[in-house]
Image (cartoon, rainbow, N blue to C red):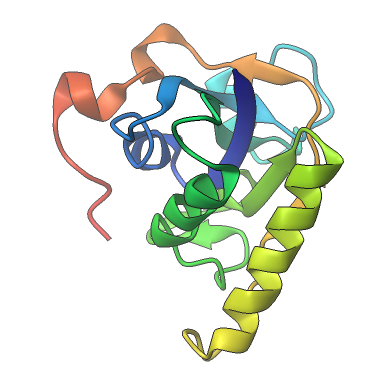
Length: 155
């Protein structure tokens, strides 16, 4: 099994984009990329911790490739919006790929460059590509939120 970590706005919808994909063994939402150990949702929402709302994916690379996960990530949000997705604003909603290996970094950078050159968006892709650091699991009520409560992000 391998891990992939993505941030693309509200983690409820981002997680929903991945948990039904064949080869994805587990997902969990949480906080990463910040400067505070064990942050709470309220702390992250304040915008002062530097964390992004993110989803950590455990996947079987025999059944699904990292490139396929990247494709789902790009589909899940507008990667040209800086620190915002739909109505959610703040650095905690930034677009980011937190890579776990040099191979993931290389593939993420190549995919970002290809998307930028594709003409799909009028604006440049602003997705950060940075090393994965500590991942702090969000509170239990956030896990698989849409599966338990229905709905979508609505934007």
